Length: 257
Image (cartoon, rainbow, N blue to C red; front, top):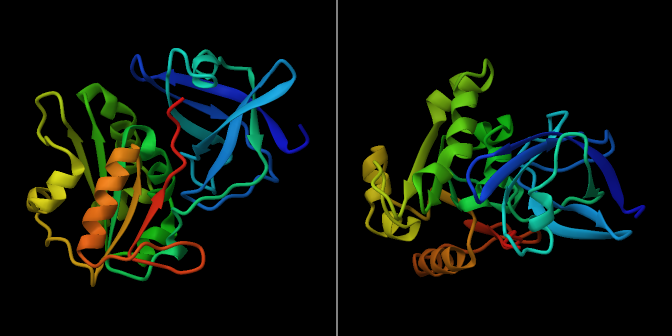
């Protein structure tokens, strides 16, 4: 158990029957880059029960925040969804992940494409001043099935717009585009379709996808990631990693259990 920090749960918010977020204390020795994830979980019968979770908080914040689904029979999430203020969680001492800006070739516009709790690493990245220095425009896309599943992201962006530091940056550079697939809403459709049809860019009043200037990060369901990867590669985009920066990066560590 020495490989983990023991942190105290500070608050829990249940957004829907299937989504919740929570904040916890942060050891001063825990370091991470915005967009990375760590193994977190609970001690069960004297042993750690863990899953990969992206930090939804930025690395300059004193507390840690995580955004999770609830799975009734999930080994970890069936237990994690019941945590309360004061409970103890385990956080791995080492953070990692591909969704960091250094894994991208310099560009002009950054597309952050997410579904469900895949929004979490981008919640961290849009609170990073360096991201706003590197890119002229940032587009945060969050796809969900139902409108109420957008609540965490909508609250996140609303709070940042009211923030003294980030408010001016957001108004100048960030476009937030929530979309749903199963209910009436101002934006409808799958992210892949919205990009290929150029509906996303038309709605935002921006230019279509361009490999010369666009850089992409994605996190979400495996099916969405596979579809987007094929689409971007078909347009000449190259996948980046820690050894070779590219036009797009994917986070494959996705909590579904």
